[in-house]
Image: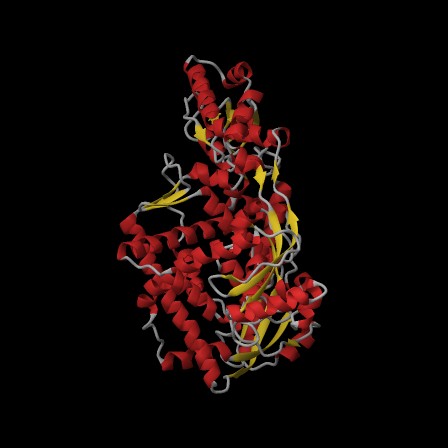
Length: 632
């Protein structure tokens, strides 16, 4: 939860621990937990449940943090492509497992202990090293966290730290390993390199017909037309099923009345707050403020900037300190409060602006209500349509006839191979589940009564095979140009490899790369000294890694990034780094210790997983990601 906050603020509490948890859960993963369709929660570990709201909130925080790094807002779909959704879910499941274990052990921290930890956190301290209430509130606001939410998450993380410290406290790497790692990371190599001209070194003579026919005979399997099948499909997605659902105004109005409070916006107030170490100081300041001609002049007299008293525009529920919240929401606009004793300090409050709450009308939320009711019924509608299609199939009807009668979508693929490609080389079916649908069509021959395929969005697909075009060997005449292209590419690769190896042998025998380059009309470039992890112009990552396996003066030929040529590399110098400074050793010790600790926590979480048992409800998981909506 606090990971997003920690990206923007240095020194936040238990930052190292959360990094270890992220590493551990990334190693652990969730690839094997998608099951439990009967659950009402999104995920469960032991008796602890993770709700859809919890997952969505955590995902949005993660997306917001990454969006700030990328400089543009990521969509949920882009987050899914990066695997962020699974990383977030892994973290939630892992923290829930640790929280469950903490409860079993009876670990708990009081409100006073958490408040004291927050007061002492350097992140929230001002210039004088004291807790700054305004700074604290501003940091939470920037990271989209309410005080209540931060307080609860802080408590959970403090408890997790106590529990995991017992696993990681003694993981200290030995000094000799630090020295070895320092040399490995800091060693630099100077690399001379030149790239062969593929039009010269890879040039091959045009093949005659006999050569092409011989190549064709030796590689016949490369020129086989695959088996194609004609595939009729009923494609009942959850989005299509929604179109069959009718929602009446009476049903929407009934839902509106039942949950009217959820369609209201609470009153929000722009609150200004002055914090003091004790009540006497607050009363003295209050007298000065009341005597001043204006609030702004009063602040100036106290040496306080206007911006230092702003804590934001908040709803009452967003304020963690109940005493301060109650006082702030009793004030009139512009009115100063008497000193209020809060959890962290004594404060004077002023309300600069009030935004009244609002109750949304039925007409304003009508579309939202309709979507809500339709979404709740879509699973039942899908199941009813599924049963009707299955009943019709049992009666011997064809898929096209059934689709027309039940008014469900029908698609017919004229020809597709086993990989889902049409004869023109394009995808035969545009659907997220295309691979599974096509795979079903290729299980057995035609005439089989195949089971319905459950789609990712909760819908179903029914597949038949209306025709089969058998695999066939394409004759030489049909694939003449393809054979010629394949032969030329193969010969060019052979020629380039041979040319590169010949140069390597000449360098290893003592010839200078510059002399060989002059002979070939090429240029030798000298890359700046690089470490194993650095990049250099003109050299691929593979070339740099290869250079670090060579002795000084040795050469190698490496494929270029596009695969169309070869780069000859020669190691000119190998330089060990200077002796490690204490600061460098301390940094390496910290890095290795984190890796050791990550391994320990990974093993710990895995053991909890095995003991408690865990599962993820795919249907709710997809709903939380808005997959149904994305397919509309």
